[in-house]
Structures are given as structure tokens and as C-alpha cells.
Length: 394
Image 1 (cartoon, rainbow, N blue to C red):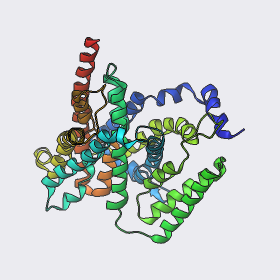
Image 2 (cartoon, helix red, strand yellow):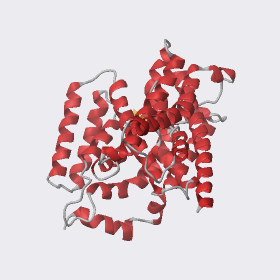
Image 3 (cartoon, one colour):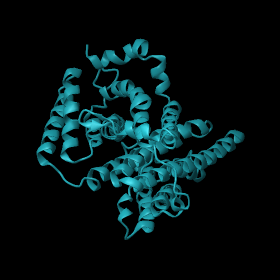
């Protein structure tokens, strides 16, 4: 009997520990990442800030800890994102685009409008290259806030947000791969393609041994890293190549098994490690931060551009095409989710690192943290009110 048929039941009885079950909870994962970010900011602004800088730039093999976090740890996060994208495309809410057209268009508009807001404030400046920073929605944080405040909201609203975030991530991943690749080494890229091809063949012939997959994954990751493309793209590629539909007689697909195993590691270790290494910015500058075009572009992109893009895109496609909003949802529900989509955090911090160096990256990250907090608070408040209104109506 195959390993994938036996692994998940075994996990539920043994390896699926209490800690693992807790870390699979959206609210817990979001809380851990938030705690890591708070520690990073507090440490970077404490009398021991030099120790923080030394830790971030501590060399460990070929990379320092900051790059291990951004290029290495986040690859696990993006691998799981790749699995989610493929599952939604084949068996989930994106299987029939006609049913998912409203959140799909909302996601695309929700990427474009914040970028345009940022560019409007940074046009003609060297800082214009940060246009993609406010474009990303953080799946984990957004779903965590919705889980906390939306107990009486329809389950279709979570599906709307998940579809929105998955498409958003797919677009931003493509942006990272194209817009933030300055030069390509085609030899390394060919090596990555070869290893990913072997990975795909093993999935096709139902290869199961981790003795094959782990070396292939590490090799493909390193080849992508050396090719000039951001290394996290390797994680997305492997996620998209992983089989998500179980065979006949197979209780769970490899994607389900791997998500079950890897989500606690991503939520409890990989993403918090990235937050700890990346979110530690010095909060200073006073009036300069308030007038800084990078800060204004990112904050307004997240807090104003995201809601306008998501809500405007959703309304336009429902108004001018045959696509319809799910009957269980109201536009006031979508408005709350549109504001919540302004929680950028993880991917926005990554794009900040890819866009800038020095003082500009600190300004961008400060803006990401500020904008994400405002979006989470306002979006959470709006959805909480909607939840209470629906609860009172029943």
C-alpha cells in the first residue's frame, strides 16, 4: 500500500500532535508571526539594536540569516501557496472560472490599483521601483482576522477571501519572477528546469520516497537562487507540480499529505523566522516619515488602493457581465473583506527587500507594518459589525 495512503491516518493518531493541530489553526499562525514582528521591531529600536543587526547579517554557509529567511524559509511558505493555487484551480473555487469571476477580477484590480496609487506618488523618482510593495495580500493574516471577527458571517465569505488571496499571490509571484529579476544565468536556469522536470516525472509515475524529493527540492531551489530569479519561485513551481487529485483507492493526495505535514512548520517556524529577520526596522524620522513618498505610497496603496481595487473590480464585473456575487453575500460583506485585503505584511516585506536598500527599505517596511495594522483593525471592525448584524438578524 502506498505511503501517501498510510501517512495521513498515521499522523492523525501519532505525529499529528497537539502542537501540530494548534499550528494549523489560522488565528494561532497569524498570532505567532505578529509576535515575531513585534519582537523584531522592539529589538531593532532598543539599546541592543546592534545585536539585532549582527544577528540578521550573521553568515551561515553561503548566505546570511536575513537571506536564509527571505530566500530559504519563505520558499516553504510559497510551496504551500503553490499547492493552494493548484488545488483551487483543479478541484476548488477556481475550477469553474465563471463561478469565481468576481473574486478573480477583484484580485487583479486589487493588485493594479494599489500599484497605481504608489506610482502616482512616486512617479519620476528613483523610488518608483517599489510599485509592487502594496500589491500583495497576506493570506495567513487576512484569514486569521476573518476567523476571529467573522463567526456569524457566511462561509462563502471565507471562500471569497481565499480565492481573492490565492489569485493575488499568483499575480504577485509572477511580478516577483519578472519585474524583480535583473539578470539571468541561463545555465543555472536550465539546471532548475531539469530538476523540476524530474520532480514532475516522479509525480507522474507516482514516485513516493522522500529520498528522491528532498535532494531534488534542494537542488532546484539552489539552481533558481543562482539563476537570478528569486529562490521562492522554486517553491511555487514545485507546489504547482505536486499532485492534488488522489488516485482511485487513495484516501488523500500527496498535496493533502504534504500540507498536513508542512503547514505547522511554515506557520510556526518559517514565516515567523522571516518576520523576525525582516520586520526589524528603526522607527524614526518623525515628520520625514509622514511626508516620505515611499511611506505615503505604500500606506495609501494598502489602506485606500486595495479596498478601491477589490471592491471596484468586484462591483464592475458583477455589474457589467453575467458574473454574479454569491447570493449569500452582500456588498457590505465584500467591502469589509476589501479593506482586510490591505493586510500586506509577509509578501509586502519581501518585495520591500527586493525593491530597495538602506533607508528606503526601512521606510517601505515601516509603511507595510503601519498600513497592514490599519487595514487589519478597520477591516476587522467592519466585519465584526457585519457579523453582529447578521447574528442579531437570525
